[in-house]
Image (cartoon, rainbow, N blue to C red; front, side):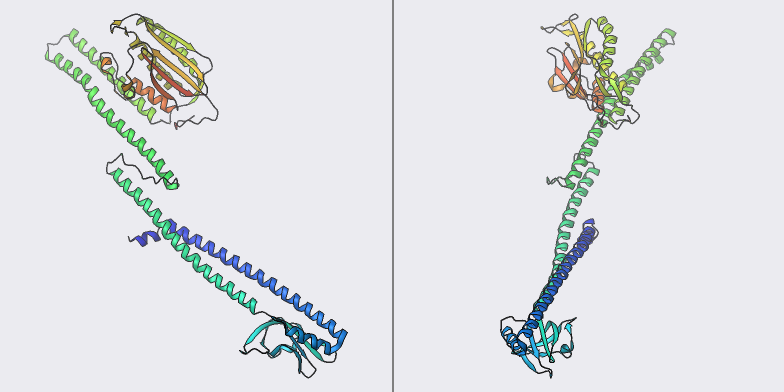
Length: 481
């Protein structure tokens, strides 16, 4: 399709046509109204002026007769830009005035003429007809007087208005066409840029983004919104790729181990005791795999902001209190002490099960790693391990802190450990799948909370910060309340 054809089909063209019609009608209406009002004012002013002239001349006739009236008309006729005057006797002979010729029937009018009449000026070398508004009245003795005003200026004004109307229409049409071409080309160029960027994205360049001109117009706002969506999609796709890679890497080992054990058992002589051990080992490995897949599914549902999740007003302090009492005994069994400081009535909006799972994951990690507290010389000490749980209100946030004095996490690894299946080398010997912190991070994002990993000197301090309950709070989760 040609460029002109594309321009014709644009919304900008249709809008330009609509605006052209609207502004044209407005301009025509405004100019017509001004012309009509001006003509009415001028006509009324002319009629009033002629009426005053007639009244004055009638008074002069009463005071001084025809001779004085003739002299007054001659005097007025000689003034520059004078009105039209004509005094005739009963036979139609001109006694005084400045009118050389009138159109037929003009003197037969009695009173104000309903329409302009044509006349020739006295002493006009061109001898062309002009137009005037006149008033004819009779005097005693058969005398007749005509008083009028030339309306050439009014006619000229009407012509100027007419020309202005035509030129205004032309200018409006030209400007509308120019603006249409400019707007349409600009719109088309932006749309073409978006189309090209979209094609590159569909071809696999997922890091591509829609162009933003920086003008802050509606196209920029649309592009920024779409770019945010594309960034989210790219993140999810990278996460999916990482999950696939991590599943292939981390789940291959237990599956291979389970297969080898079963294959070794099949190669041996049948033995009920040996078979039982192999089956128990296979069940244990299967349970671990099921737990891993359950954790993956839960993380995926949380990150996808599943609509079946129920959000309500819950007391975060009560959740932390219950978990602290539950893990207190487990911490003691592992040689660690658990200390907690929890305020009352820490209301937030969220899903009780997910928040409990997140805090449980953090507490379990803290107890597990604090149970082997690192001494100053690098040796492992089985006593002195400590875990601290706290929940308090800080301004408009509810802050939950889980801290331990274990080995901690280096600063450069703190963002990395929030990803799926990521386990630091020193944690490889401990049971786990590397999904605990990933679930905590997903739950925090679902609840508009912030998750921070900080140095506890020694150990790790994890800070979860939730918005305080507010009836007007709207979570960006898409979950049903």
